[in-house]
Image (tube, rainbow, N blue to C red; front, side, top):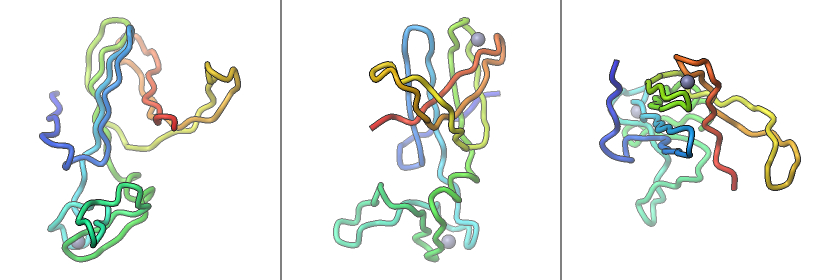
Length: 137
Ligand SMILES: [Zn+2]
Ligand SMILES: [Zn+2]
């Protein structure tokens, strides 16, 4: 299996590279075509004044036919592609539904537990759970 990496950020709904001493992950979610007209990729609506996508918009829309879906609903149908190198030294690739799970995690700065959203998968060799957490603000 070999995942094809996106050629440009414009193809992606989500793209992230994380790396620390133990773990390297690269993950991306490709935009998918409008399910209504199948002509155009769904994207964030554009600001008519600037012509630029409104990245904070809570919906995706088709430029071709105007079909609009709420952000969560659209993202739930997508697939996240992940390339990783685990702490055990194993490198692999995985594709899975782009659905974040809520988990409790200790915030090292505040010492308090907090709920975070994460894409969680397991190393195909050692079974270690690997998280791609949503970046904190
Ligand atoms: Zn359409
Ligand atoms: Zn591993």
